[in-house]
Length: 304
Image 1 (cartoon, one colour):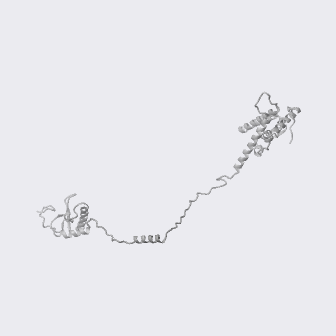
Image 2 (image 1 turned 60 degrees about the horizontal axis):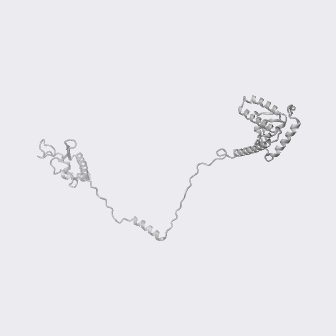
Image 3 (image 1 turned 180 degrees about the vertical axis):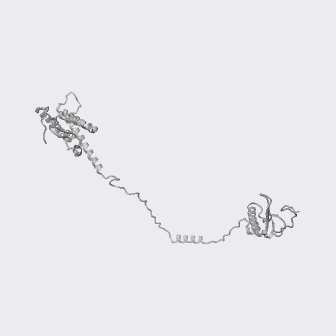
């Protein structure tokens, strides 16, 4: 690698030796925070990254910032003028492509300028409470260590097996089958008692009697009509052929339905004649072929 010419604006040797001594003191103050800091090569070797070439360093700007924070590069030998010129040239090109990248490198360059000013300038005596260069370097080293720990934890979490990608859960779990086996505990007396109860249930001590319903069967109604119609010489109302105990209530309705059905059957057989003077009027019946007994012009059911 060819080194560029020495910067004419570089500090004199006396200032450089004083700065190196101050940097050594700062390094001793930050001895507890000088753990190595890992730089991600993928991030440092990006094609769109800012690669600087100045006195004392050549490489990406983010790596220079990391080394400067970790006190591995002497900032007193770095020319801020060359850094600013190369950075401005890079900003002009990066502004056309990606604004976020330019903003990130602007923060890096500002930190480098701020750290170098802290190392070159003596600490002010009148201002109390302001952090010195060594204290700032120690804090930055501690923050970088915390950042490195976060990155490692993030990588460990990312490399873990994830549900649905590397590991798959089983399907719907099956229900738990509960098989119960009863165990009977009984003595001889209880067994004999249970057996006798079952035997008693199977025996019938009383005869079952079917109660006769209060209805008049069609066969009984026809038999009654055949017996009574032979003595009737004229028209008679159908309710006059009801049995004596079927005169009211449900019995009357049953007798009317059965007697009417029996009458229609006998009319079909040619044994009876049936008449009705109008809707909802009484029904009259008589034996077929018997016209004597009713004078001419008399209404059915009238006797003169």
